[in-house]
Image (cartoon, rainbow, N blue to C red; front, side):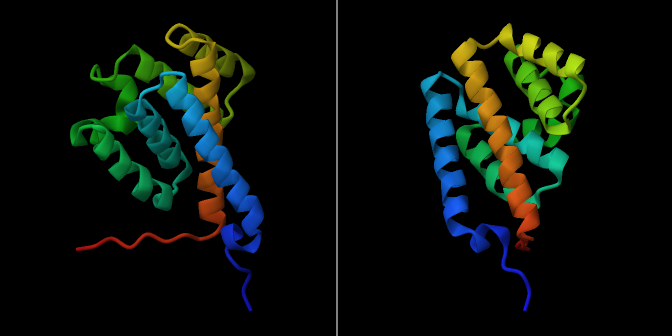
Length: 151
């Protein structure tokens, strides 16, 4: 008999993670972070981690929030596209460095760049969002969640 998916093996732990994510989203919106920004961050982190299940959730959520398909298509090249503004670029840089766990110097530089666009509450809410999408990516991957595309 195989091991049950991680999100089902310890249901209460997973429920607490979901509750934390809800609290994080409330903190993010309460701090004034836009849903489009949060979804771009969720997508970029999920791209870096290779989490198809989270991409299948957050790409439609980004579209629903108003992110254009062109911006979604070009998100992996955000550094080279003028269409991404200063706050988005700072948030995406922070998301990438916290996902890859870059050097201390790069993390500090990314945080400082983000602090130019976000106040303390917004920055901490953004960091929590990044930490949590990374956690959900890992739970989904460990649980072997599959995505089935429709024709």
